[in-house]
Image (cartoon, rainbow, N blue to C red):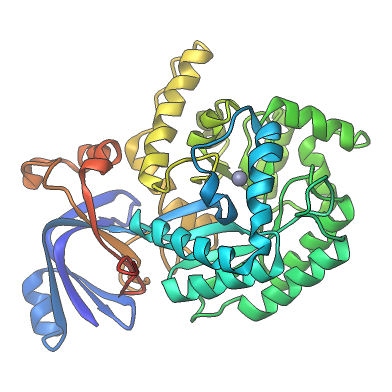
Length: 426
Ligand SMILES: [Zn+2]
């Protein structure tokens, strides 16, 4: 129960961001009960503590729609493109999670990094080991973050990360039963078949069935890299396309998110759109592994929901602000590479993709994604003194643009999930 004073970035009814200068946001039991004038707040909630974030901006918490916890220690290393990088650096690192002590130490650090960067909700590919995923959930509960996490399931390939189809499915089910909707609903289980190259059709079908039966989200990778695509085409010669494999497995629809989507064909895009599935854009990762430039403008024009993912460790930054900036820059790179003159992604849209659009993709937009009365107080306090001289002279679009381009010169002071501070766990 608290009153927060500051400059509050709300979403107007029209869906447009609007900055309320020098205002108050009141929270009771983790829910926003009032946004408005300071004077009114003091009268209405006179017994509550006041937190004066004088000069700072209060923004909705950021939502990272795709990242890999067991890749934390592989950030910034490795050579080659996707397939070699996975074999040479990522699988060996993820194999270390059979050691529970290591798994716990990394999970702690990982959640600490997420919240420090202003992320209040994340979708996380957990370890491939059941015990390590269980440990990661324990640490997520301690961290107080909102997340969708699961065990990364794999039943094919040469790494010791694989286990039998049956084992993967029974492990996922028992973790789901133990953790889904725990910590007052902040923790959610999500089904995570790694990608068609690591999963049998049978396991993908089972995963899709579990997701459907229990109304869970399901997320996987698709069309990230040209070699990966030929590898998949050879592995599944009887299917018409990459997306066709997932569709036949039942991995498609409103509960489904496809990560990368750089090289989808027109037919696949149409199928994806009609099914109500979403796309997760990871521009930093796409460049780091030289995978390609996703045609973001084309996907948005098709009215496909698109959110952002840091994709640690192919992505090297935990910041969703950074991903928003790179999403804008990647539309420019796409224009350059393809001799196009499309408008770059507007910064306000990039911030929406990092907040409310992402919440819609996860089906939690009534709960989080924007600062509105009735929603959870998931928010961050940003000190912008170094980047803005006089807030009253700043229009909201240019303010958002400055934050996205200069977030490293701003300072995240506090991060709240359901009104509770989560960034002081170190
Ligand atoms: Zn990924």
